[in-house]
Length: 327
Image (cartoon, rainbow, N blue to C red; front, side, top):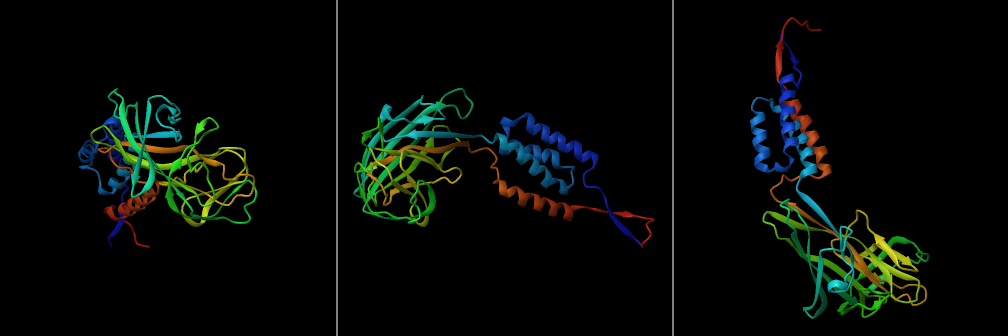
């Protein structure tokens, strides 16, 4: 009676070929373009078993992850000032930045547009400073609707807020406390909202792209003697982040970034709770080489491994074994 047994998947010949392929990838990390990657792949796959293909792909993609041609540029300290009066810093430094503000009227809505140009980094390794440009837009709204929970009476935060935007109104920036602050008509009264967005992101390198990642934080800045400020972040509800503070407060979103940042004033309990504004916007932009191999999201690796295991099982070749008695 004929019996079947499975040969080991990874033979010594396969090990050597895998190591050779991976060593080439490590040796030339700056040349991992699709053409180079697939050239190595085809050259080294002709005599390997099909079951090895998923394993090599996963290992190679993991190596490329650290050298995929991406640079994250962090902007922080963005205020309402224009030109050199803006406190904008890039990657912790205020050098090489230029901010020009222009005021536009779009559909009868008052809107500030900050045209930002940053030329303080080299993204493609040619030893020349490249230029990253974008527009930051600020719009003010008034007579909107905001609500929070009655339980939020102490200096704390909770996801209990709701916001409905009102009509657009000019955004003013009182120079109080020595810095420029975004406000609506000089204060942030109940129902006032400030909305920020970043658009028209570009980099002056052929074959490169720039993508806005989102706002990661801002500062609630007191503009006068006051306390009991109630601040809601976002639009809609009823579970928006709500903060109550009696002083200037730095807000950090962590990983929960906002593509569009909306900050509104709710009914505060205190003395002159409307005396505050928004300062020190923080956000990231990623500059990347379009030619590099796209890297899957971390959650995708689990699916790749599962598919690899399935492929291994399906591609294993049986061999004949004789002399095995059937039990």
